Image 1: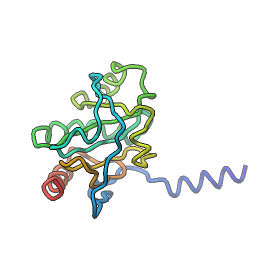
Image 2: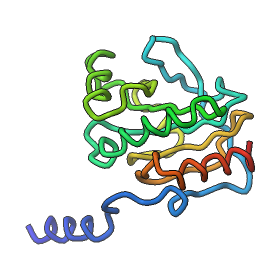
Image 3: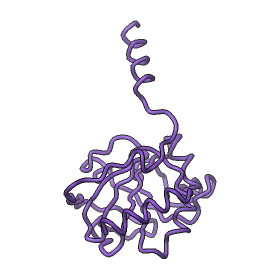
Length: 176
């Protein structure tokens, strides 16, 4: 029993609580990295690779319906999407396909939590997330216009804040 209490205490101490600002939690790489070649499936049923979005600056947000911070940031992600959709910035909201019974269920959850406009994708058995080494959510992968990963944002953010929107636009300008 003591082992379990100790383990729980360690988790509580080291587990991040609350949201972080995107610029504080961002990690930009010195050298871009290739993205995994596994497919993600759009809400329409169309399959894509992360590299298929060349020409757009991509924010691939990995989330889970069971993640409190993920749910909390959905409304601000919707506002971010609306504010940047015509600026060459593509928002991909990605969750594991095993979380959902249907596309209708996912649409219902997104609408309930304020993100009815965001296009969503599923990651078949979490292969893309696993290849990227993502085991927690929310986690955002930044992909340049060449289809290469240039960095990541750990944790949630207030995506609708002017500061975060401007920061992402600056990243797009600097890293393409």
